[in-house]
Image (cartoon, rainbow, N blue to C red):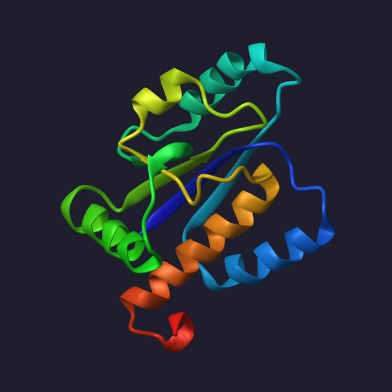
Length: 147
């Protein structure tokens, strides 16, 4: 499995960077692409163009969006396994900026995923996503981390 995370915005808090790095050290083949956050709602389309230009053609695209499907950690792990087995080993996750994702990005996605109906800062959402990717790999390996 080769994972790419395209995210709008930079991580400023050192403690979040440290936590993410702890998980990233244990994950293989994961790449994070940071794009600049536009200052207002009108910039969402501009962000969308930048995001779309970074998506590999052979990738299964999962965009984080509040209106997306919610699932348990186990279902998330099974979904990733299904994608890898039936479609492609390349998965791209997309985390939008302060104003969300453009409709073009959502339309280009194979799946919209929601971690909650609540709104989270995109920096924190990146940590949560990375942890859930790690957890999914542990679930698929029957590792006790998930218990």
